[in-house]
Image (cartoon, rainbow, N blue to C red; front, side, top):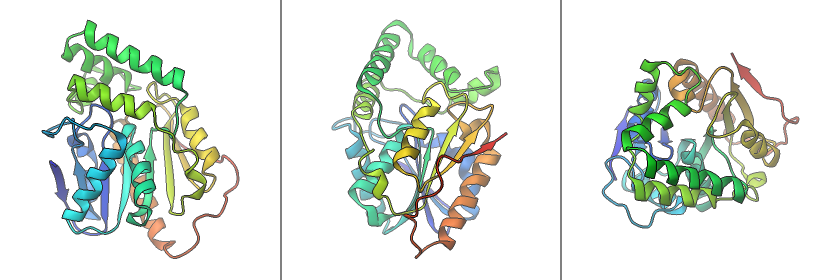
Length: 266
């Protein structure tokens, strides 16, 4: 696997989204002053040369194999969009590996019809548009503030290869982690955005419904990429959450918190 390995301290693994690359987390590199950041390219993405056996389960297995190779027994995990599914799958496969979970702008289950229509739209657009046009469309849709400079920054976060991209999308829409969520016993943070056009906000609350112990933070005036659009605040939130989860280590994290209270970040 191609990966970034920078910093020192507790390992923090970042997992990118569909069609994205490890460099999409470059705005979080400043966290390397506090943690050892491990940021891989998933198979079929970025510099990865392996395009076969694409699935969420295989992504998770690949990440765990990488951590074994790096002799990392436990880590904090942050996944955005499809990366959030990979984090949930890692917990399903190896719960003892996970110190805390950050699920950013992702889902745990999507209704089949919604997922199928999204997949068909992606396939149609890939046929009708050039790759650059498709990446521009994707990057623009990911943003709240659709300025030329920000669109260009968002475009740099994507390198799309059609076949693994579609295979990854197919596996993602078949995922269902809802039955597992009530039994997750590590600190969990759910991050959503009020104007996310890719993952509707209801997906965050669906996950919260099955995971009442999780904390929720919602970004106002932000799209699908808070790690870009609100990077300073995003990094601050991740740091605060991880440090708090370390302080709570050894205590029971399965306490049911009150309802759907969420903190909105202006």
